[in-house]
Image (cartoon, rainbow, N blue to C red; front, top):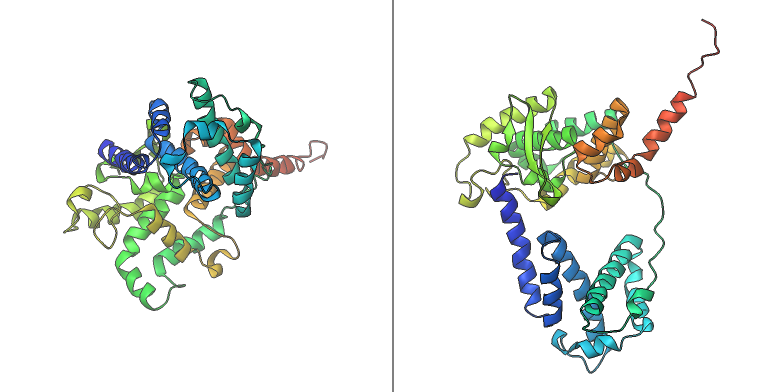
Length: 341
């Protein structure tokens, strides 16, 4: 991803954030400005969305509150643990512990700010209980045969029909290049769609990306990935009528603009049909998991996997690839040094 693409993505979230803050109470804007230097615009936007959901609940439940501006600091100072628990009860129907946990965290941090700066004294938000997160870190990934079937489908489109088949004829080279690159490097879907032409070095077999936290990294790919990528890049350089703002984008949609993460999600879903991967639900993130699993099985080095996947902590990687570790431990049981040759 070029610096321009990265800045464009950040500006998109800044614009969304500013639109939301226009209708929010001033103290919420003060809070977002306070954490501005610590978080990316996308993270700040998520915080505001979480708090907006809480404010929406307060507006709906209180007849005296008609809009966000009516939610005064005095009103927040009078909230009780029952109020917070009622909000959590209203969103628990999602059956997603992590979703609820994030809302709890966002509200606590916001109230911590208000208390620290002496806007309010109410500490009932601290009494909210985090939902228990199930410690099931089993990952879904494609094995070697499934990967081959998946790429064969991307190439030939044997599971497609009608309009899909006709469209596939026009996008086959791009889809092969893009999905093989994701499978062969483990990059995130946002990192893939953010790539520009000059981020790719076919000679070195590498791509240059900007990861979370503005960290820049060179990621290397195999000769097989190169064979898929090279013809697409030749085709891409001859492409006409690409939108000016996306003139240097690597992967282009049928609308001649930079392809979006949502479009890639739909492509993966289309090609990962049941007759290709069975009952597994394959998403762009599962392509990443497939690469991470294969890399760990090949190297046995969790640090390399963490570095290549761009995890901030090796502990994160170890947590999600613990099942591979268990499989390696089982194979160790087959090593019999007592058996005579």
